[in-house]
Image (cartoon, rainbow, N blue to C red; front, side, top):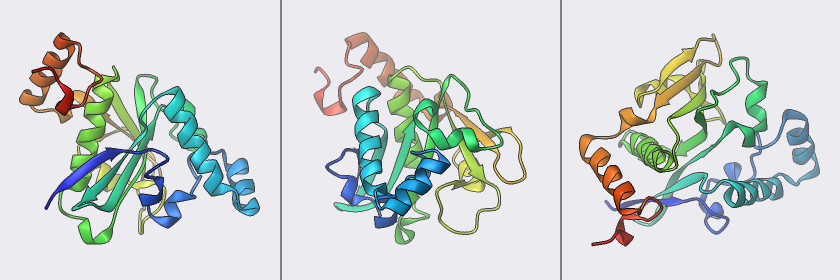
Length: 205
């Protein structure tokens, strides 16, 4: 089974599940989001948000492919780019953290460790960019796939609760804890060789 995690761009946005392609729950504040849905412009707003974040901040997501079939995705960005985050009772996200906004894995591919792989991939990307942690709002009463990730899932992949709440706790993952010793050494070598922004295949020999 060949699996790849590819940076999210406007070109592969179409590989996200249909409902996620036009969902602006996180990308707009509650009032603007409702307006976009009623006006039928939510898909356009989603594209505009991704385009703006890519240009201003850089990579903000990954799409997971198994044997070239898209089976999941993860979205993340600094909280300043995530208007809905301020509406949560356990906000704000810490200033040294990037927000893990949402993620999804197709049911047939759940339980295969892809969630942990996604988190590790995001962690490596953010460490290379100088961030220390990821934070997320969890749904403690989660029953079915939605925009807010289940708190239990976040705890299972290494997050710790930093602010308790009966419905929407805020959780945090220190990025260093997601790396093995081997990966740590590789990152140190990357910095030494000035190849921080390069993909593994492009590293100097």
